[in-house]
Image 1 (cartoon, rainbow, N blue to C red):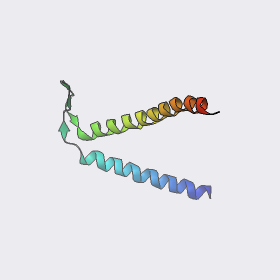
Image 2 (image 1 turned 45 degrees about the vertical axis):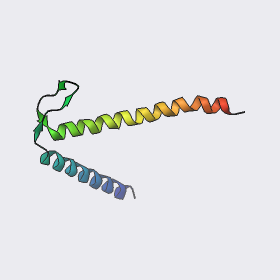
Image 3 (image 1 turned 90 degrees about the horizontal axis):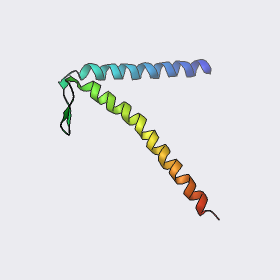
Image 4 (image 1 turned 120 degrees about the horizontal axis):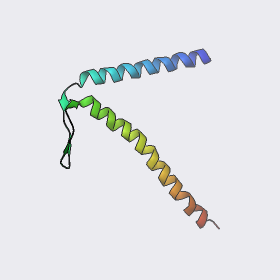
Length: 80
């Protein structure tokens, strides 16, 4: 059974890697982002999208953790 799980995990990993590679190769157009007067250097669009994904993957769980930690003391105080 472990062998089957390992093969499935390897296949899923390969499919994701091929998808990421196809995404990067299809989005090679250069672009510069402007935000509040600050402009980035020219870079492929795939870099900006990948960075946004990674930042979201880091910030999302941190915000969820902050809400969970903030909610815990209130529920203990309200309990009789």
